[in-house]
Length: 155
Image (cartoon, rainbow, N blue to C red; front, side, top):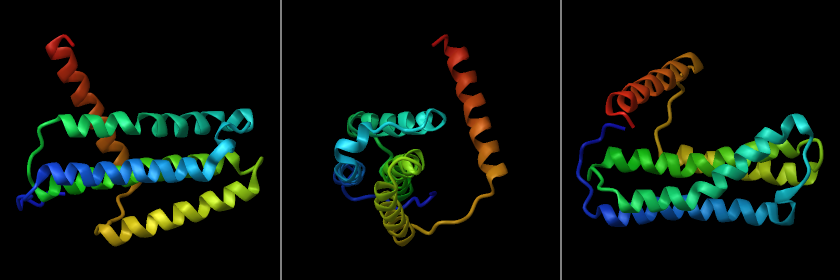
């Protein structure tokens, strides 16, 4: 996401990616409806809880994006756009897995939503496969760098 062409209207781009995140989150909650609080097997409760957390924090993520100063480049907003799509996609996939044993009908509906959102993501961005080992290494390095920064500032 290193595209350095400037964005003409960063505020409009923030509003756009924010609406993607909030719109898909609303769509997921509409699909779940009353069954969002469904009982899932104990071993799958962490998936349900993590999905709920992603849905619950979506509005504050959008608020943070709107309140920050942004680098006005295409690559920056592409990164935010991918995140805006991945957060509800991940929540839907986790709920699907959590409900697989207890609500097969809802599980099928969530599966359709996940497939649709994956197609939208593929259409919107030039996605490339990154091996899990590389992804894990990136996450570990990011966490270590974050810890170093926090420890250095005493925060």
